[in-house]
Amino acid sequence: MKIRFLEDTYIRSTPHTRLGTPIGTVFKGTEIEVEPTPVEGEAIDDINLWFRDKKGWHYWSGRAVVVELPGPPAEKEEKGPAESPAAPARAGQEEELPPPPSIPAFIDRKTEPANEKIPEGETRHVPGLEELMQAEARFQGGLETGGGQPKSPFGALSRSFVPGPENIDAGGSGGALWRDPPGERLNWAVRNYQIASDWWQARQLAGSGVRIALLSTGAATGHPDLPHIEAAFQYPDDSKPMQDLQGLGTQAAVVAAGAGQAVFGVAPEARLLIGKIGEQDHLITPEGLLAGLEWAISARADIIAMLVDFPGLPDQQMEALQQLIGQAAARNIILVAPVGTAANKMPESRYPARLDHVLSVGAHDQFGQRCSFSARSYHLDLLAPGEGLTVSASAGQVKENVKSVAIAAAFTAGFMALIRQQSRDMAPEAVFELLRETAVSRRPFNKGEDVECGYGQLNPIEVLKKLDPSYEG
Image 1 (spheres, rainbow, N blue to C red):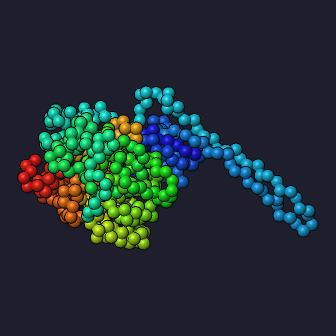
Image 2 (image 1 turned 180 degrees about the horizontal axis):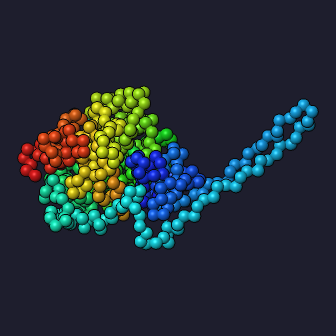
């Protein structure tokens, strides 16, 4: 049976919200296969049915709809009973099969009540563009008292040359758009960090000549904001047409390098290498990551964003992953990965973010606050924007973004493309040290040892001061 999610929904190991923390998130619009009969569990808004997939993971049914019922059971050829020496052979008899399991009635979501209450926890509200713009206006107005939002810490605020033309005309990719970008196409982080004005316009640093590989759920082909997809790879079957059923990979690509037909990414001139290593982020396997990483290295990526986080790896796969990461670092390739999604108060380590030669990135929101879903870790390097960033759908319309540490890692990958364009021979470890040194720390005395923020928040303004001493910010 196949279901489609109508809201971002947590993945749980049991059908109960109080027995452990979520192990991941499945996003709005995603379709997955589940067992034909839901199981009973904790009741939320009087709905106690939970879907279970083949891995034994559970999803609350209150914000999902059945889109494909299970087919009729396959007919089985029944052999006759064992024959005794004295008994003649009997013709086979068809077994009378039980009726297929009943499927509970689900609400027709086209006519569901408009004011149905959805609990906080199993599904999440993702703010729309109008709501984000209102929040941004409050932020820019400097509300700091009377219940206003906390002030942002930023106040007012290897090179592989890519063959082909450096600048694409506006009709094809938005290559000219970033030179004079419409303000409504810039998300809050690009504005607050002064990336459009100080990196793109003043210094012509928009990621030109830099290849970013994104290893995730693929990307929508023909997307108006993704004209710079140079190559693609799919695991395990590289012969199928590229699709992104979940949408995470597409959103990450727009955040990193959107060309600005609808929404700008951080590096609108960067070239993209899209590695689809799983239909959904929580279904990505270590084998898929290894295959994608090997492909990205061979495709001469400058930056590789591995948008996965594994709680653990078998020794053999750990050794193979570390070997590939070492090969990438030796080729001057910059590697970045999300710290992980978790609500645990205890620090934990995820792979590949905890490994040497990989920048570990968590998420913060537009008010400079660490996102609650961003995992705590002793290996965390810094926080980057991972919530409230506008993105574009495959048809080009502006849409709601996901809240994700993977998005924060993609944003960081896009920003490092600007650094790589400006300083093409800067070693990956030197780039990491530059980001750590310039990060805004909420606890300067504890910088680098803060399990919630690492060295602090990504700070493009201070990075540019280091790269260009004449820049005053």
